[in-house]
Image (tube, rainbow, N blue to C red; front, side, top):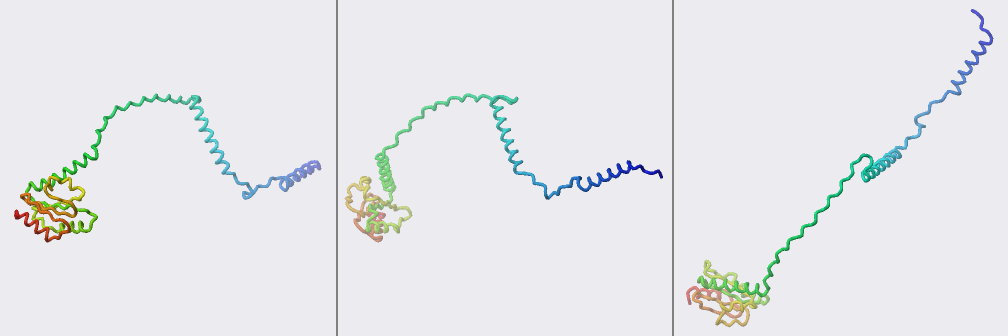
Length: 211
């Protein structure tokens, strides 16, 4: 085997020494994952949001100025003038309270007269709803025998006695309670003051019999 010259050995030795030095001291060491700083994800989200806002602002500017190839916003159509409302017909004036009161009074009087013309016995009580005797007189009429519709009862506040002038003509009604029993032949019986069911029943029976 041929001998290696001295200079060549020196070169080999120097090369080997450099390789050992690189492996031991100069070679970069790998960094552990646990030592790597985390990425700032929240900063990334903020950056994206800022970019989106900026893009939207730019789009509005381009749309307003007609730049960027966007369509120019159409001009607002002129609004039509509001139609003038046609004058409404004026409502008729409401009936005055006194007219309505008169009509109501006439209706009450007519209802009693209708029952008299139909040949029914009419029991008409004029009363004061706040007086004890009047309340008792009203109670005496609750169980009155109406004889299958041949007898009708009307209860009227004493303050309305003037509205029944056609019924009470010739009859003096000066206080309450006053009970008026009108027979078929317009025979009238007046019971002044507190009464009882038996007295009312007797008066009705006489009116039905034509007495």
